[in-house]
Image 1 (cartoon, rainbow, N blue to C red):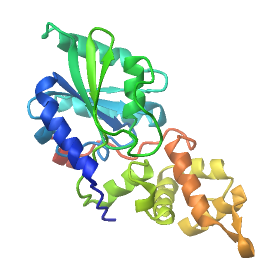
Image 2: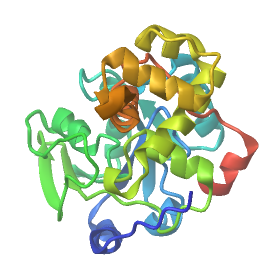
Image 3: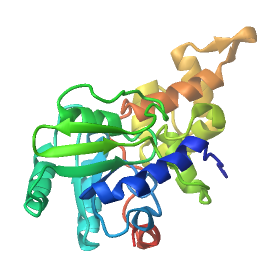
Length: 278
């Protein structure tokens, strides 16, 4: 699945980041805890140079806890600071505050950071928790944020928000699929039914019991049959009594993204992760 999605505002985001790096002390990269590799900006170090990077594994409440700990250990081995957070209830923010306070001792003014990340990883929700009010627009669709915004978080921290930035070209199908599963790619650019069948393949292999329990279906079937069963289970029927598999596909993807199938991680640390983390 070769996805070519790099509209003008993403090129603009890269320019915003580069132009404002001289104004900030650190970079906060928001990644999805369910897929830390696939939602990580591959050329982040080339983009930010020598600036300190903190990896924020957001939506940790939707990821498998043990897998998230593996990722945290992996990042530590690479010499990278990382925290797992839930931007909805502020879990993990105390640890982040301790890291930033330690770093702020090197400055005699409010610490300044720039927030970056691919679309739909929860940057706006994260910023709203830091700032303490709804200063950034939030939504469950990629591309909500536009332009750039400086936001004050008390008297010790100032943040620069930026729009989402995606890979110019997604070569690995597995990465493209995971970004699609998580809603990081605009829905109109995808074949929802095809993506949902791939997600079903993953769930049947890793978490068949979650799929069966959520949709009251039998999982020892082909992905196509399972998608049809999901449609029938939910009453999604179109003319001729046929199952509305498109509606079922969109429902499955949305419910997976919202954590309705439980805490599920899409990837674990592996040797080839070094390709994008070095």
